[in-house]
Length: 216
Image (cartoon, rainbow, N blue to C red):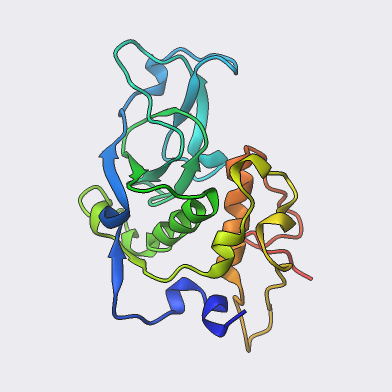
């Protein structure tokens, strides 16, 4: 693996950047209020996605209200404000949204691995929206890297998703925790954390850092 592939995206220097709108059609979600919706039990209804930072942004399972068209599976949901601003998740099934949630529909076919990569690249810009700043006006023009690491395309196909995270990376993730080389392969760690969210399985916290990297 090259040194470039091991460098976190926020540490890379490039003169060319993509914009969110280059890769996705950006639209606002349905902006629904959860307390006005009817909660149901799966497999009935659809997921209700809010600005939550965990559980893939899903806070409830609800019946689809009349006249509302759910957003399709395979889109990204992006929180545009709140404590979890720019929390970005791949939604594996149709869903409806609360307030201040954008829906990003890919302009071309993307694998789950690539969608996870773009989700984390978008979320890496969250520091720009501290102190209550919102991303409503700027979500389309957020800059993204043009280079995608090779391991993104080596992830398992959607039908092969399992709870074994080893299948998502070409080699075990062993991040450095020494002062000389912090955050080695931290970008890969972010993808690992998102995989749990896509699977709908709660990520184990014990033994993991905030980026989802296992300490050894």
